[in-house]
Length: 68
Image (cartoon, rainbow, N blue to C red; front, side):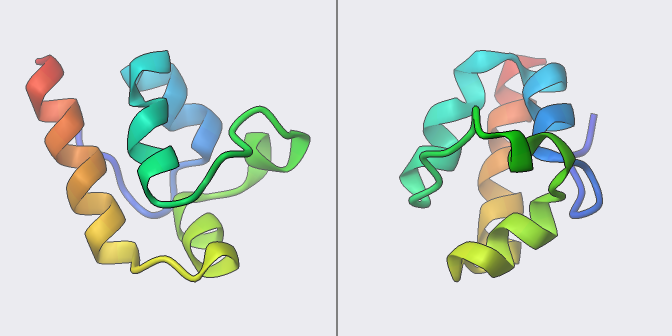
């Protein structure tokens, strides 16, 4: 599965499981359990936290690929 910018944080966690949390945390996103993250897309989260979207998507997809 390819993780894209339109997926919610919750969807990414559902697809990859809780083991993906450190990938988000490495980018300074420590609020994965907050209510906003359930409806916030990867793109919105990156913008809100000042994170390079392409860099985060690369890391998330590398993680997802390692789980296949």
